[in-house]
Image 1 (cartoon, rainbow, N blue to C red):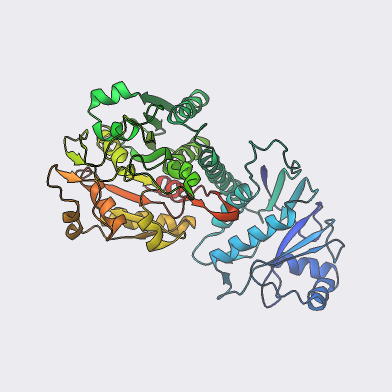
Image 2 (cartoon, rainbow, N blue to C red):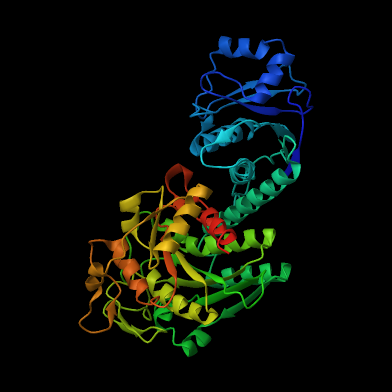
Length: 494
């Protein structure tokens, strides 16, 4: 998709389709006012006749001129204004309505004029960035395994009215598109079936990115190398699988190498049967999404490579497949982590924390400014927060506040959960330094407490994305979250 910034007059602009907004009191945006004046009030009369009130998420397609030169005019409902502003979710709903209106259309290009529209808490560049991000993700679809492909969508160019600020809008559109592309890459990896997206496949994806971008270097540790590093916890997860585990390290250097990097650590369980602690069969197909933390790390790196910011970022993906076999780790087994701490594995389905703890220990060698791990870690987080907010845990309140603010700014929100010492005792073991589960109560919290045992000397945060990484039901598929939050933090953390 090509996004173009251009200043134009809504009434005289030529386009197969011009898109403008209408507020819920039927008041017109500046673009609508220009068209209404040129058409001697035809647009106002039509709104009244059609009873189009501009409610949130609504749209109305006009196939004739009411004052505009464009062949067709699409009206998007912008809802109620609050002191002249609309809410961010209403703006996103309008963009979704735009996608619904054009997804089967024959137009190769369209123009969008939302000048004069302001969103609460955001500057104009945010609007342009969101236009590109949302439409990039809305217009993407996953059908590479369909024997009969859907009709190719002809829409390939969207022109946004820059209203005299072409350079700023162009920059915002590029950033939004890069975030959208990163989300789509994360969605693609997440949607791939487990027989294709293996740890080796993810390693090859990283190597392919490095071949295309000189700013990126990649190294991959195999199981023999991980054994030499003492990663007994991570290797206990892959013990029952024929697919070898991989520790994938991607290093992006856009600043001086003396600048401490921010480190992302992604859980990459490419399929999770639960191991010997086998999951119920119903819905187990969705356990291909258990690598969505890793997918979001890949998507974030792709966005950074497109934008090439002056920052340093190291991404570590702990990739493994959790399978039952005669070699699989058993409940009650005790393993030694890279940190030297011993772990009693009471439930082999609590495997994400077992791969993450060794990856977090490995991250220390980069002397990071911050470390964020991203994982579809616990069903308990889904119960606590549903599918709207990521669960956020951190050992540094200032860091947590930065991530919460980044999520709000990106429209990819997180909610902070407690990480109190009182919960740590639930992880006590009679036979090892720590147990890998802490009982039913506060399951997402005790999972974070487990990880905190390996991050005491790090500025660390944990994002539990079990409820936000994918959708179930008829809309089943990976969401690409939390790529927007991560990119927002990384671009504004230096």
